[in-house]
Each structure stands twice: as C-alpha cells, then as structure tokens.
Amino acid sequence: MAIYPHHVGICVTDLEKSLRFWCDGMGFETTMVPPVGGEWSDSLEVGGEVDFTAHFIKRDGFEFELLYYRTPGTHGAPSMSRNQVGFTHFAVYVDDMDAEIARLVECGGTVIEKTRTKMGEGEESVELVFIADPDGVRVELMKAGE
Image (cartoon, rainbow, N blue to C red; front, top):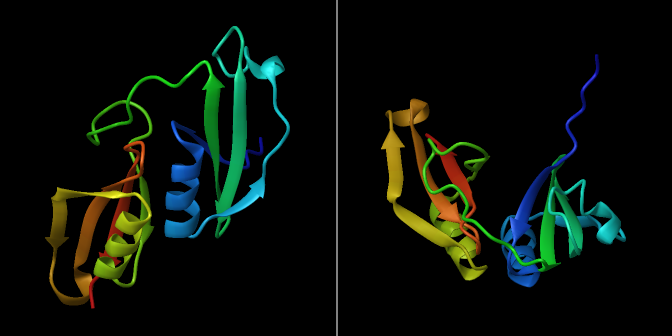
C-alpha cells in the first residue's frame, strides 16, 4: 500500500487575514485556487447550499488548504490546548525567535505568552512559544540551542 501525504485543511473566517498570516508571515505561497461549488457539499460534510473557496498554499513541500465559507458561515473554535482531540498545532523551527514573533504579530498573529518555554542547556536546549493565527490556530515556533 502506498500513501502519499498531500495537504492539511484549515477552515478560516477571513481569507485575506489568513493569507496575510500564512503567506506574508509564514512564507507560504499560493499554489492553486481550484474552481469549487455546491457539488462539494456532501464530501465536505457540510450539507445544503455551499459557497466556498479552497485556497492551496505551500512551503518546503508542506501544503495547507485554506477553506473559506461564505455560505454557510463557519462555526466552532480551534484547539486551545494540546490535549484537545484533533489537530492541535503546526510546528516550525526558526533561527531568530524574537524577529519571527514580531513579524507574525505584524501579520495578524497573537503570541500566547504563557507558552514561552526554554528547556535544556547549550546546544541541547530548545526554546518554544505558540502563536495563534487570526482564527486561533496554533503555530509552535521552536529555536534550537546554540
């Protein structure tokens, strides 16, 4: 059996704000915005009338599909703790923690201050902090020790 990962979907409430965070802030690039319509209603497990945009973004071989629903609107909330069932976060390494935090905040992200952590010493250390995208989806920034 062959399985090849393709993408992870994220439902967003404001496509422009999400594109600013994920593309301008995180460095992803648009790869495809396929024509979609109501025929996808059942496969999306939404049912009824559906008017949405599927916006694919990619960086370094990793791809997200940003799903923006005009009809019906969005509902629910993203994971606010790492022990909540389902997708809890996306993790990336950074070279300069403070510079990346500043850039992501400028692009609509929110620092979750209580998550700032440093473990270990010297080259074996790791510093991390979680940032929320405009809809609250968590991104873990990790910086390896020096």
